[in-house]
Image (cartoon, rainbow, N blue to C red; front, side, top):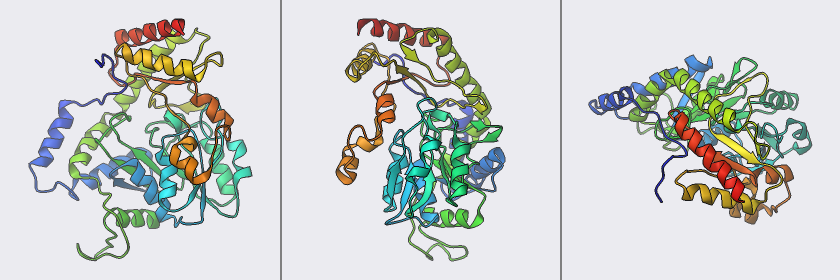
Length: 374
């Protein structure tokens, strides 16, 4: 299939290429000076005390859970409308993800429904900043504080967003960003843990590096650990990307505005919005079909768009209905009806920094044409 307009695309300049090549000319390809420099980019940007770079957002979430001592028999409250890693990281430590249905406006976990899901087994809440929208995160943290529960903030889609003037990544006890090529910045693969707790940060530093401790040497291992390190090659790329983050955020806002201006008046579509009090750093642009359309029609539309060379996707299918989740926990369709309803209607449109006005117009023209054919 000939793809004319990609769903996502990284924004790489000659500065990033030079930075990576400069590292390749040194002996420090991993655990070199670029690692702490990249971490400092995040403490400077967020104002957090500590930042720990890892090789993916998934690794970051997993290490947060491990550092907090969460394991077998424990429960962690999270959302069923998310990328799979939010839930599987909980399962990876042996705990159970306890899903709470979403608010259909923000698409985030509904704070009003969280307390009913808290039990004596609950050890943390893991909210997700879905599509970069932080709405409701402050309320989740208030509930967690009331019940003395840590918050692991999944900010993998929200770098650069803020809520009430407070940067995303700084609400939780710990938080994680991710740098896959479709994110606001990329390191190819990579992630970053943020926390103000030195003990938790030190544990993550040890766990990401084969369980090594301070002063124990290369062959000294204080605990069971993992190789979740981020190389200096990746970090060099990330340092330049972080220096360009304000530019990226503005570019993405402009692309979102283009879509909104063209599609705003079509009653068949619900467009993503920037809620009051939120400054959204756009991750993706996901529209939703009205309730007049069926799941089959949505899927037909996705197929038609792909046939026209325009990459689109169904962000997200319900996490809890993934086959292995159903097998392990016995979930069935309808357990989280609001999530089900949203998931049947979503269409992620092409979205990246350098999408042109002509490309956005083409996407919208084809989208509206496909709607007429349903």
